[in-house]
Image 1 (spheres, rainbow, N blue to C red):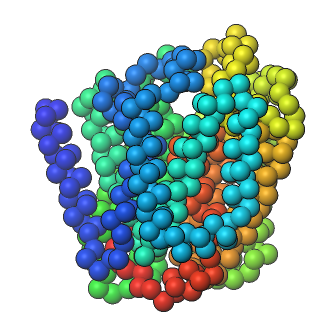
Image 2: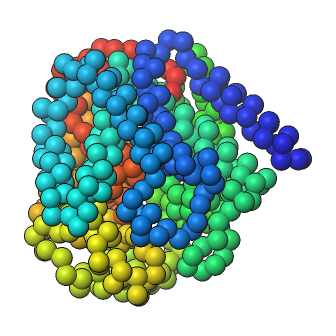
Length: 450
C-alpha cells in the first residue's frame, strides 16, 4: 500500500471512530474541544513541530529557555478561551476554587518562587502554562455532563493520535522514527517526539479505553450502542500494538497497574472498606519503590527494561543533589535547568533538561517547602479520590488508577511540570468536587457515550 492510500485510509478510519462514539443524548458542551486540543498538543507535538517536523533531538539551552513564539501564542489563545468558559460558569467555578484551596496554595507558592528564578520572565511564562493546565481541567469538571466529558477527553485525542502514530511508523519514517541521543538506536515515536512520549499516549488513552470497556461490560446494560464499544476496542488493540513496537516497558507496566487497580476497586471488599483499599495502594507503591529505588537488585528494574542503575539515573540523582541550590526554596519554578547549573551538569550528562525523577525535580525547583506542599497535595488528593469511590465509583476507579500511575511514573521521570500529560491527568483526578456538584452528578443522566 502506498503512503498516499494509507493516509486516506487512516483519515477515513479516524472519521469512523468519531462517528461510532457520537451520542445525540449526551449533554457535553462543545467547550470540551478546548481541553481536548490542549491535551492533544501536550501529549504529541507542539504546533511549531507539527508544521516544521519534530526538530532536532538535542535542544539548545537558548531554545529551551526562550521557547517558540508560535507555540506560546497558541497556548495563550487556548488559555484565554478556557478562561472565557469558566467566567461564563463563574458560580460553579467559584465553588471549585473554594473546595480546592490547598491546590491553589501550591500554585501560589510556585508563582512566588518566580521571584528568585535566574530567569523570572521565563519562569512566569511556564507558570502561566501550568495555570492553563488547571483551567483546562476545570473546564472539563464544570461541564454540564462531567463523567461523559471525562470519557470524551480520554477518547477524542486517542482517536487521532494513536492511528496517526501507526501511520507515521509504517509509512512516514522520517516523522514516526527517531534516533536516540543516548544510544544512537532508531526508536518508534509515532506522533510524539520521543519514545517515552509515545508510551504516554498509549498509557493515557489506552487506559481510558480500557476503563470505558470495563465499565460498559460491568454494568451489563442492555441496549447499549455497539459503536462506542467497537471504537474503544479498536483503540485498545492499537495501543497494545504500539506498546510492543515502541518497547515502552515502563508505560506498559503502568498500564497494567492501572488496569489491575480499576478491576480491584470494583470489588466490594475493596471499594467499601477503606482499610483494604489503603493496604492495596500502600503495598503496591512500596513494592515499586523498593524494587526500583531502594533495592534495584531484586529484579524489578530488569522487568521494566532497565538496569539496576536505572540507565544511569541513580548516579545522576546523586550528582544533582550535590548541586548548590537553596534547600528551603530551590532555584525557582521550573528554573533549575535555566541557570549556570545547566552548563555545569552538561559536562557530565550532555544536553539534559530534567532530573528523571519528579520528586527530586520539585525539590531542585521549589526546595523543601515545595516538596512539603506537594506531599500535602498528594495526601489531600488521595483523600478526595477515596471519597469519590463512595459517591461516584465509576469515575473514582479511574481516578485511583491514574493517581497511583502518576506517583509511580514520577519515580523515573519528571511528570510534575506544566504541559506534561501526567500533570494534567494528576490535576484531573485529585481535584475535590464541591458537595453541591457531587449531588448534581447523582441526579444528572450520565449518558451512554464516551
